[in-house]
Image 1: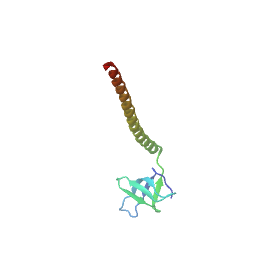
Image 2: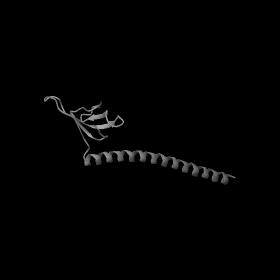
Image 3: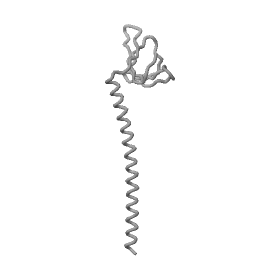
Image 4: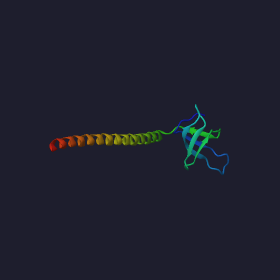
Length: 111
């Protein structure tokens, strides 16, 4: 049974009084399949190799768009932080250059 990150997994209960467990595959730990890291809908996480009582479904188009949006938002935040740091560095260097030039001009006027 092969799955990808983002796929939904349902572990069907073996008895009538136990509910099915559903979750999302958040990590593929094998080179070409199981075991998988699964985050259940209640927030618990586990590592498992699915048995015959499990079904795996790829995410819907809406879920894929939500995942892509989340990743893009995270990346945009990272890039914005890097850009901010670069801008502060460049601004700092420019301010130092202007201050140095002003100091040199002031020295010339003092002579």
